Image 1: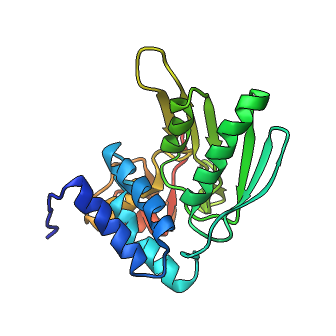
Image 2: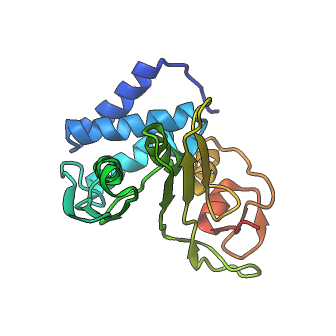
Length: 227
């Protein structure tokens, strides 16, 4: 049986921060990650929230992500920016890129940034929302491991490849659109698996290509494409 526990925002933030700093992650990087996870929770995106802590810690300890590195600004020429995450967490690299984008837009009116050698970047909508809060229109595109088969297929060939857009508005909070090319973000299936809950029909197929509502079998199989 899954037990639930209510904690404050600070307690949740401290939980994420301490889990990372106790496991080979610098304070600066842990702050960025904790901020991102808490923002996702407040936006109702639990699949990109605290549920990611165990896998993030495991990936640091296994060497999949380097917890103590800092991102590097490789180049900033004209309106084009290149950032290297150095195999570290995505969030510090994204913050560096957003800072450079904001400065570059003041000079050129437009900017594009690429981030290489990065880890999972979480809730894409929040990153472009930060640009909108600075008065800019933001677009973000990301690649992911293969997770979606072609329609009618059973073998994953395409990534869920998130797309996000944000625009400032005069009399309201920024308009934000955050979507995946699968029916839903794979993180929602991961959360359902952690909670031992069923998923709706039409989200995924098992490894044999059969429709499934079993979250574990869905993770072993493939997500279904949008459309």
